[in-house]
Image (cartoon, rainbow, N blue to C red; front, side, top):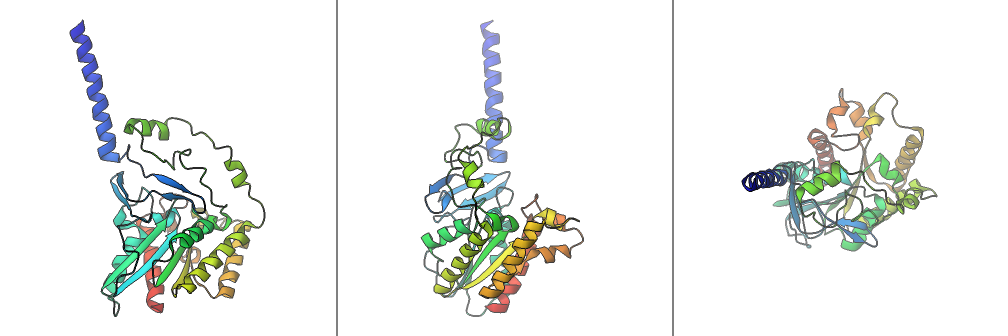
Length: 314
């Protein structure tokens, strides 16, 4: 009887260990990207971390950017472009490091062989659900790293983004602040247990006033900050996938978009709107990973369009 019990325990333990190792090695569970709180920015990806999620390599440098370690001062004969944005710029767990917009743009600009440029760096400061006010706070904290060009990537929803908050960190399963002891536990937390709402977030989501106006003001301040640092500024906006469907953008989105167009014209901001660009595609949905995020094909389209705009101005 004892022998049978030992065999059962050993078999269960072996199966548990096999599943644990498989979840870690094949899918990257147990080693999620971690976040830290910040009073002004709201939250940042924890600096200096590396992981793989579903086979995709993710590296975060010392400035909470998605990318390798950099020098704060731009090396001579280096073209440095600074992308800042939310999960679209970041690429998320579904995008390998080499397939992010920043990595693709670096390779494209290298191939262009610009005069007086021996090296190209494309920095990528971004995090899930950041809005213009998060991005402005990041730039105020860290600066533009002497980049010759700063590219702000937003999506339609960002025009309605709420104020920065650190409430999700450590409380929302998508913003962990520590690693789980077991990969199996992370899977249970993410896919089995029902997520617990954060009561205080209700007030954040119900932020009143002219939210679009507040975010346009933040973009204006980013533009001013970039000019103060003798850099060029480019604003890029991608649409939600439903805006490419038959019904198109909703009335409030159309109004906000028009305000943005008038704002960029008044401020003389270089602006790329991907809504009309994607509307020309026969299968626009094939550029998307989900309802808002781009896949590799979408990233390649954005990269090529940004590259063309930069080559016109550099």
